Amino acid sequence: MRIRPLLIGSGLVAVLVLAGCGGSGGSTGSAERANAPAASQGPAQPEASAKDEQETATAQISTFALDVDTASYGYARRALQEGRWPEPDRIRPEEWVNAFRQDYEQPPDDGFAVHVDGALLPGRRDEAVLRVGLQTRATEAAARRPVNLTFVVDVSGSMAEPGRLDLVKSSLRTLLDQLAPGDQVSIVAFSDEAEVLASMTPLTARAELSAAVDRLDVEGGTNLESGLVAGYQEAAKAFRPAATNRVILLSDGLANQGETAWQGILAQAKEYAARQVTLLTVGVGREYGDTLMEQLADNGDGMAVYVSSQQDADKLFTTQLTATIELRARDAKAQVVFNPSAVDTYRLIGYENRALTTEEFRDDSRDGGDGGEIGPGHAVTALYALKLKPGARGQLAQATVRWQDPDTREASEAGKSLRAADLAKGVWDKGTPVRLQVDVLVAAFAMYLRERQAFGLDLPDLAEHSTRLASLAEDPMVSELTTLIDKARAVN
Image 1 (tube, one colour):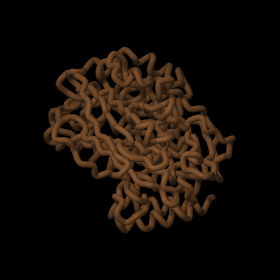
Image 2 (image 1 turned 180 degrees about the vertical axis):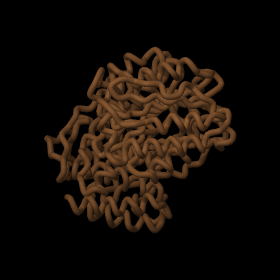
Image 3 (image 1 turned 30 degrees about the vertical axis):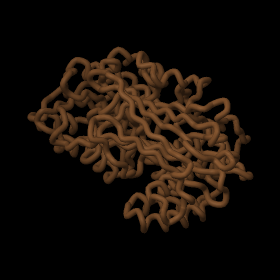
Image 4 (image 1 turned 120 degrees about the vertical axis):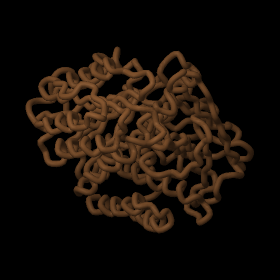
């Protein structure tokens, strides 16, 4: 992830210097972020660049693959709670926003509901935030299809740290109690090499699976390649077309044996990953291989999450995973077309490594970039910073989502537009939707941690808005955000 500061200037879009945006016709897709050094007292301040600001006269269309990862928020939250400034290259604003509840209306069918709104920014009538929200229909756990889950568990020496393997083992035991009799589980452990502790076993044999969990003991190095390939092989051997088939990697991502780059690891597992077996990476540990785990998930048609406490693990394995483990959509992409007569420039906040070309949006012959696999009840939010034309009127933008049916691969689309007259008059005004305000606050805090400026706000401003919104949102995560902002102020 390229790290660029935000410069205070006359317009918001001029100061919002973010790395990347949804691809216009000249975009070539995702690129791996460079590994940046850790920063304990705040991010470095590299040279500014405005090259990612898009002018609608020459780049009218923004296209990107959808993303439901939340690992960036989970890891940064732990760092702040420990009194550390998160490494700037690990801050992905879209993952922060997507970690928060959205309350979008759900669609009546298995597609997407599209929500588009926005608000003017205070003090300048030509600057606004546009929000595109995409929502799938939730599924009751009892109504879901059966699952084949292959757990690939890191038992290398680095997992001996308190809060790593013990947290993983506790989580697995919790999940086994949540699954249904029609589900099946296999368990693969890896250190210097991989070992299958339990081949695909029905949940009616919970005692055998629990015994396999008890056998997870720390030893040796971290040959993540060996573990993941063995996991995919187990998943492929037991593949059930009528079930949801998923590999779940639990690791700190600190690979040090075999292939250690995500490209090489997935190349070894490509044959198996192509068989409609999705990947979930669950990160643990204070030292965490963020880039490896995120890129494995994104390029393995899955998602990346991070857990730092038993509370996090319980939420993931008892509530989120069992309800969202199946798929609503494959290869899901979004495209936003801006009206050049109303919008001067735009910038997509986050999604740097999800960029697609305009042509890739309706090219169903190839995978639509990193990720794009969306489960039931998931909300995906994208925020754009806009600079409006003087006296902007009429339609501002048209947002469209395209996806494939998980089973038939039939493509569908849904869309919605927003007019200039529908913008809220002020993003922080009383009449502006609370969830829109929370999304802007969360994105601004993430950008501040990464780049020191966002929406012209500093940490005291963010703290003020967070305190106010915590009482309005009735959401413990918003209340926690206030604490995290205070932690950032203490180490700033």
